[in-house]
Length: 235
Ligand SMILES: Nc1ncnc2c1ncn2[C@@H]1O[C@H](COP(=O)(O)OP(=O)(O)O)[C@@H](O)[C@H]1O
Ligand SMILES: [Mg+2]
Image: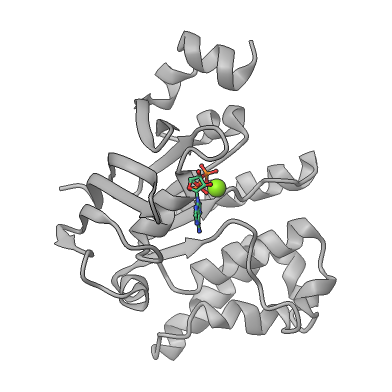
């Protein structure tokens, strides 16, 4: 049984069709990347899985349907969504932003352990725990957003374009962190603009266009695919 199984997912915004029957799986501990041009429906896919937008079709997590659950229950089931554009509380400290990710939890010792894990993953926060989020650089804000998502202790992390707009060095730090998170056993569904990095990091890749999956396969195999090389790698 896959950790996440999505079947024939359809999302409309008004009359516009944003997801046109998407099916995919994420296995336990797997890192799956979704590539595709702007407007392909990648963010909508993550929002549908986290129940932030209504959809039809099937979303099974650990074999159970999420389709009737409200978004906060999906978090409690073990899916945490780090959205596009970070969405931090700008006036709040790093610490308070991180702790918002744990708002549904009551297991204090485990929360402390996860906080320690986030500070180990992003040591830059150690001296900055009281700093207001809007005074951090873009890359640091992205790290807080990922850290906040981890504070829900997810089994599956949904990451929407974590490296967008970042300089090379910070991008690398973010990708290193994603690799660490995955190595600690958390499955990841990653939407990423940087196809080269996504193909390096991921186990499997889906390519979306116009609300549909147009290609899928092992990352190693897709890295050699003619269409992928031409359109996404520019070689
Ligand atoms: N809140 C919304 N209202 C109306 N249309 C939307 C909304 N969000 C996204 N869309 C449209 O749905 C399609 C898919 O968008 P999105 O999932 O954000 O794509 P991607 O993340 O791949 O760039 C696009 O045509 C986009 O314009
Ligand atoms: Mg998007």
